[in-house]
Length: 221
View 1 (tube, rainbow, N blue to C red):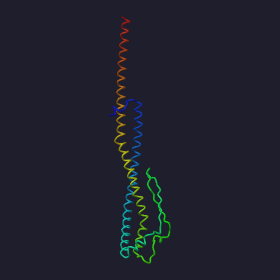
View 2: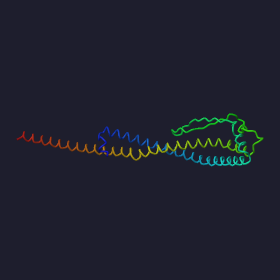
View 3: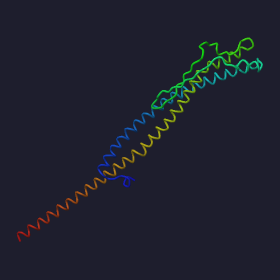
């Protein structure tokens, strides 16, 4: 393969040696990047697992409270109580860079700092179970946003890990071996040419010596 693609010259040999040095350095840097990305990914994956369990437990508790509240109230009263939310939440998304990957950072703000503004209804015609359900959802909201942030970060890191892994494999199994093969081929060709040149020079020298010897014999004859 190298014999058909590589021009066996010293200039090409120098170029391939430089390419090999660059490829080897890039291979090491990409491996280090891949390892660090894997470490970051595993840390986020563990945090994601714990947070997901917490969020699922919170949603389950809120759903249970809503079912109990619905059982103790008429459907019309429940819909009326939740028809016009009093509190508002605004979400801002920024980014932070992790090993050349821009992962999201979610920050939220509420319209009012009063904790009781989560209740959009009066307490005269509603049950305490509805209050517990609304409170459960309000308490779990920050964890839900954090979970969304971490899951998206895991997706982005996983994609970058796969991209980096393919580059490492390309360098390790294709580019570096082909470059080494090319260097070996050119070195062998140059050595072969050098030996051929030496043989030709020795033959020329012998011919010149033989001609000089015959010339002297003719002079003294």
